[in-house]
Length: 254
Image (tube, rainbow, N blue to C red; front, top):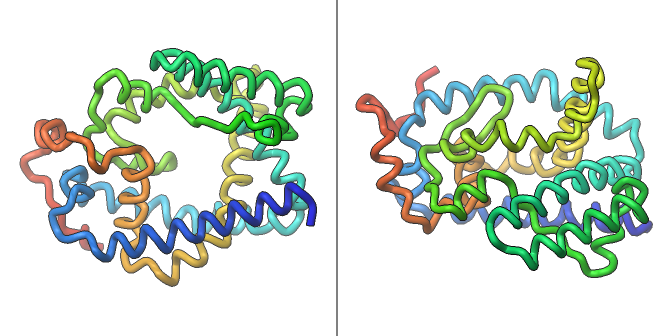
């Protein structure tokens, strides 16, 4: 097995293990847990989630499946590396803004090595030489500056977010690889490639999730909040100040 293929298999195994772990944790979490307190607009969020899920089933997943069948795994892995390398550069900026100068320098070195010796990031040499990825974005930087997560939000097309991450989203877009292109068609092509390639890498895990998750919405919500570091933080006060009077935690009726 080639190195890229081996890393891809390892990443898939890790993702599947995370799904099993989070599903088990979700089953143990009692009503009124932090995931629900951080989700005052659950009724509306579920409607948007259903729209996004239907769009995924009817459009994105079939396209990603064809893409996965046609494009060899090493090529898809190189595409991942390319987009990941651009994200590394943005992570270095955010680490500096957070005051983590040593980590920012290491991330800058990783970006420089992969951009040059790695042929614009297509090959991840940084990891091989011990420069591990530290993924940061403006949402996490806002959090480092003391901004609470805020309420959980699901946006059409863009998916899970929070008040804090939504405010940071326009700034994060400034680091998008599509912005280097002037033509609208090229921008759409880059966005599409990034989305389809990421979805193709998640095909096996999503199929497994279909069979084990009792409530996909709750699973995705809790996984997002866990990944963004919302659980365990003192965000309840901020959420309560944003909660609309008519908010309901009951699933929306179809």
